Image (tube, rainbow, N blue to C red; front, side, top):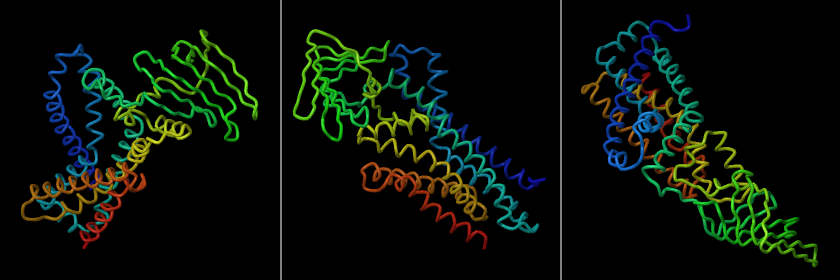
Length: 363
């Protein structure tokens, strides 16, 4: 049988401690969040069903995803330190079990938690974030939309650009709407409209008081549609004018990848937060492996101070890791370093620390 009694024993302790840690932190987080938002819940026209079944399940999913690696570190340190204090680890080694063999159940459990977190980060948590943030932007923070509405330039096709001087979100209408078409870097057609509005039924833009200019070398033709309306299909929707601060966290990975690709084709320049989010969803699950082995190497030694000292060391390491992660992300957002380096740098540093600690622990 692949799993021996030792494996099942450590894996059981690992998982039970992990989920107990998750439960405790979730209860604390929900109480704190509710106390902060209870006045908003009372003032806004929100039902108790929406709070209980839309907001808080999504909030719990968000908090769990945010702190999943830290929960792993605390769980590993807590149950491993208890095993060391009870001399269980010394008994295991005295029975002829090598340190590498002792590491196997930790590795298997870390692999399981990493797989769950990887799937959740790419698909499950973004869907939960969408419910939570939709609720927040509807009832709590109503002015979080930072999408541009003045002097907007967007490529809607490789050689087709749209310019909008003023866009009004409340009715999806625009003033001074312009469509520019190019061939070999030369403008061949220009459509200008004093007004444009989005028709949701047909998924088209209706241009009013428009003019169409076509260019063929030095020749130019002009068509005036003053007082008339014309519907046109463009790769542009009202969603393209919405940009919430945490909008990237509301998209699943396929949606996020598609969004980045589409915006790059349009010549958009504010994509760094989306690229950071895409890289983070893979880097953070790998953190579970690193923190698992750091926690195991620290807590497997029986020291004076016991569990309390081990937990203090673990929380300190977690705090330093979070600080380093946020520090490197700030540099990546400011384009001082590449996106991938800003996300993976903390893993590189702490991965090296984990290797050193484990190698010393084996001696």
